[in-house]
Length: 303
Ligand code: BO1
Ligand code: ZN
Image (cartoon, rainbow, N blue to C red; front, top):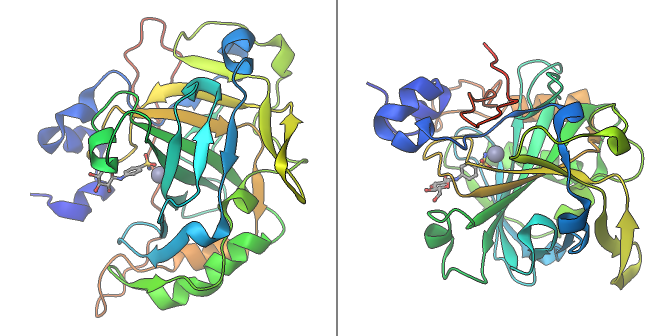
């Protein structure tokens, strides 16, 4: 009998017993087939995606036993536009998924390829709901911004987190964050890119999966100005990737990846799954691509 957090390490087929939603029709993660996504310029470009994350919003670093997670106070944070239209979402927390080797670790895959990790920035819709818990039950309640991690050079902002992880080495460890950690510095900058196909050549097959051509981000050193970014993101309606698997997430996955070092990933892998006394490391914590029950499903099974 699997209980509590250990359920997270089991298979989705096991989750269903306790969380019927895990058998739903918009489960995440999915494989993104880059030549079968819909180019929805009109709808998505009319409301460019934009975000604002004051570094002071990152309050606590937590080891819940299956990842590292930074809880924010949400103050001054904002995600809006793109598939979210005019609704304003606030950042609740961000956390990371990784694998036991550098060749796996992301939850979503791109044309069947996994990345070394995947960062998730979890937001909730403050325009429509009063609390995160209430939003988590609604089909348009949550928005998760996903960033693929590739092994390369060490990431400066990620290093601030990596340096703090020894203080939360065991499950249920938690520390207050005193130095500013800026989540917007964890988002991709010019250079890397998830997927190899020419985005202009993409066509519509999966009605659930869309491609957007434009993102707007705050210009560097110019707080109030927005900058256009043509590399874009993939977006689709999905779910939390772990129990309770709520089908409440608008997923927004950046096409471009960020680089982290092998050493930084090893620091993640060294986090412990259990409270002090038991020393089982969290070598991997990524979910696998889920069966999709869409009318024209493009998601593929992964064993
Ligand atoms: S993820 O971003 O899809 N990997 C994801 C998965 C689970 C959660 C957040 C993001 N969190 C869960 C909490 C539960 C809570 C639920 C929704 O969100 O761990 O405590 O019940 O309410
Ligand atoms: Zn996640």
